[in-house]
View 1 (tube, one colour):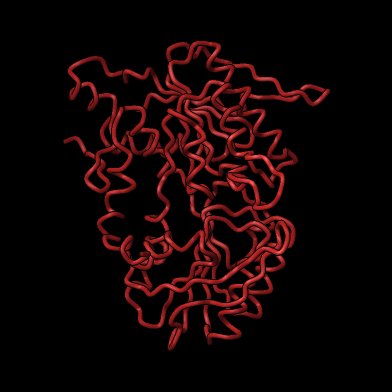
View 2 (cartoon, rainbow, N blue to C red):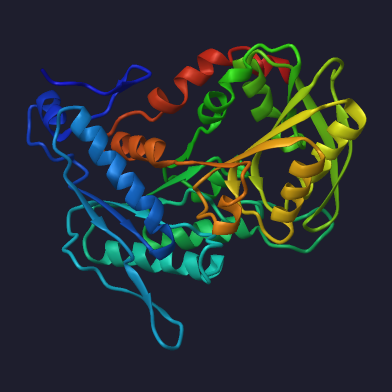
Length: 381
C-alpha cells in the first residue's frame, strides 16, 4: 500500500501522484527538476537533495532530481566562471548559494557574483525556470538609507541584478526585512515562515508561568508576539539604539518580568553578538533572570560574537544558542558546547516540491501558524 507523507494536511508530491492527478505525463509543467549550487551553497543543497529523495520515496514515488554541485570555478586572475556538465534545456532549476560563508575564504560579493553568473548560465542554456534559493539574503539590512545619511538602497540594487541575471523566483528563509520583497517587482518571492521551527524548538516551555519571550528590538517584536501567542507565553521588548554602525546599546527591557526565571530571546540573526550580549546582561543583572535561551534564523557570528557568547554562557546564564545552517558554520562555532544548529533541509525540500508542482506554500508553512497565533495581530495594536 502506498504511503503518503503528509504535513499539516499537505502531501509531499511524487511524479506518479502528480501524473494521476493531472491525467498526463509524470513531468511537471515546469520541466524536470534540477537542484544546483555554487560552491558555498553545495553543503546545504546536498542535504536538501538527500531529504527530497527521502520524502519522495516515503511517499511511494521515485525521485527524479538531477544535482549539479559546485558549478562555478575561479580563474587565475580571480574572475568567476561557470560550466555546466549536463544539458539543462527545458529543466526547472533551483540554484542554491550561501551568500555569507565564514567557513571559506569567499566573501559575500564573490558569492553573489557566482550566483548571478550561474543563474545567467542556466538561463542562456535553455532552462524553463530558474529559482534562486538564498537561505540567508545578504544586503537585506540595507533596505533603506539611514536617516540623515547619504546612502543607497543596496537591497534594491541586488534585486535588480538578480532579475537581470535571469531568476524568475526567489526563495529565502526569514529575511531581515520583509519589505525587500517589493524590490523584485512582479517576480514571486517566497520568504519561508520560520515561526514554526522556533515554536517546535521551544515547545517544552509551553504555558510555563516563569518563562518570558523577549524581542531584542522593535523589529523583532511582531515575530516574538506571534511566538508568545503560539506557546502561551508573555512577551517583553528590549529598547535598543545604535550610536554608530554595528554597535548596539540596550538600555532597558519593557514588560512584566515579575517572577520570571527563564527568558527566550529570539531574533532573525546573530551578527557581532552585541544585541544578544546587551539584552542577556540586562535580563540577568536587572530583572532576576537565571536562564537565557537564544534562537536566531541566521548565525553570522562575525568578529567578537563567539567570545561574547562564551562569556554569556560562563557568567550570565546563557544555556543554549540555536541557529540554522542557512550560513555554513565554522568549526569553532560548532564546537561551542551550548550551540545547536538546525538543518533547513526539510523545509527547503518541501518548498521546492510545492513550487515544482504548482502547489501552495502556505498550506505547509503558514496555515498552522495562523491558527496557533490567531489574535496576535490585535495584541500589537
